[in-house]
Length: 164
Image (tube, rainbow, N blue to C red; front, side, top):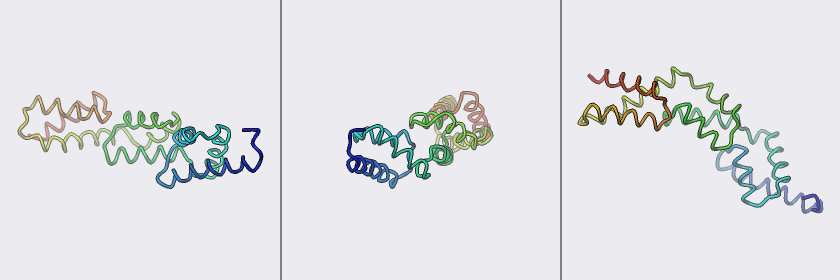
């Protein structure tokens, strides 16, 4: 707000900075999420942009690092496929460059191995289930994790072959 007197503007900047820093104290967040937070708090857009720019310059906001960390975590802990991770990152407001960079750390062989491990783990609890139902349930589970049809079919067939 250009009509704000210097002291009022400085207070508004400081309040916006405090809002963002309190949010970042809990966990890392992408710039888009922080901008939405400031918008919900009815912070002037010019002040919000100024605060976010300063914090980005200081390294407190780093979308590329956030995307990379989230991709590693989702893949390692949940077994999510690159496609599902990319969609989650897009929903969080990250740009395509940060998403592509984050997904480079997950190779197609890693993804295939993860799909097979997920299928084997789930299959271990399906002893009494008929073969067609096992196949269908495994394919559905992998699909929900974001794996493509070809990778899912390959993993399920390998898991079922190893079960014999």
